[in-house]
Amino acid sequence: MPLFLVVAASTIVGIAGVDLVLPAVPLLPERLGSDTARAQLVLAAYSLGTALGLLAFGELGTRIDQVRLLTSSLVLFALVSAIATTVSQLDSLVAWRFIQGAFGAAPAVFAPGIVRSIFGDEHAPKAMGWLGSAGSLAPALAPIAGLYLLGLGDWRLSFWVLAGAGLACAVASHVLLRPFSGKRSFAKGSYMSLARKPLFLRYWISQSLSLASILIFVFGAPAVFVEQGFGMEAFLALQLVGVATFIAGSLLSSGIAERIGAPKLLWLGTGLLAATFGLIFLSAVTGYGSIEVILPLFALNGLGFGLRAPIGFHRAIVAADGDDSRAAALVVLLVLMAAALGTAVLAPLLALGLAPLAGFAASVSCAALAALLIVRSHER
Image (cartoon, rainbow, N blue to C red):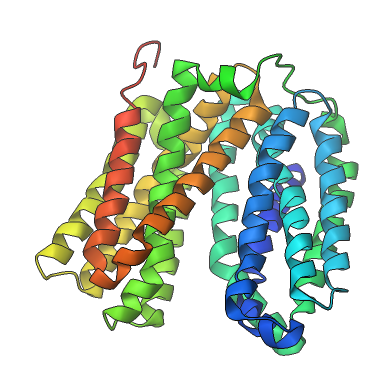
């Protein structure tokens, strides 16, 4: 369990790099002398750095010991977080956030491979469920923690917390994960050759688009909820319900897969995801899209993704045939790209209400379901 906690904590630190800082962003123009639009680059720069970091660490993980890379990246993440507290201009903070995001991407790349080394393929899906459950808490709880830190001091306090957490995880990684040192993918291929493997393609697309559909809906929900008079309290309730049922689903996933088989569970979970988004869309276009209808459907939505996520991610890593780090990098990268593109496309349509948002999320989740049709043979 201590080994798993190190991996989970390291992953959470990388995720929290966005959500812990989020409450401080509106204050940055006043404190660092700029405007609101430029302050948003503090978030965008971290995401862009993360995308670059995923590709870089995915490649490095095939050549260099992954535990050593994880430890080093956490040390550098902590160092950059501390340096960011010294800036006096917003543009400088944006630059450091890009670098911070790049180093913060490493845990997401190496966690699946290290988890496989610790638990083996028999128990890895269950561990992936625990890891996903832990990671899902960061977007829900980190903004609350960030708001609390903002009340204790200024925006710099969140960066100091990230620095301390990153350093603590680096020390724990160096001490506790040392027996797994030497883990690397030993893969001579490339991202392109991996993406051409039909079985990997199946799990990569279905896993990534499943999560992207949820992120697109969640990113657009605040604006829609405020526009329709539900209020931010309803959005917080949506987040809590979704996280709770996702955790429940992910913890049940391994046991259900043993009973009905992983392929059937993937179809069940992804189908539930698409069906609930479809029902939310139908409720919106028929005039029944109240919060009392949306919350139960989104609870089932979270359950569906929780059921399929651990198995889907594990199968994507296994289908890479030893190319663990590149596979994990591609899964997370496609999630980020699909969510960002979907959010951008939907932005001008959010004023029309819930229907475009739910309809788009339903379309993306249906694409995830369709991806399961790729290479259905050789499965059990």
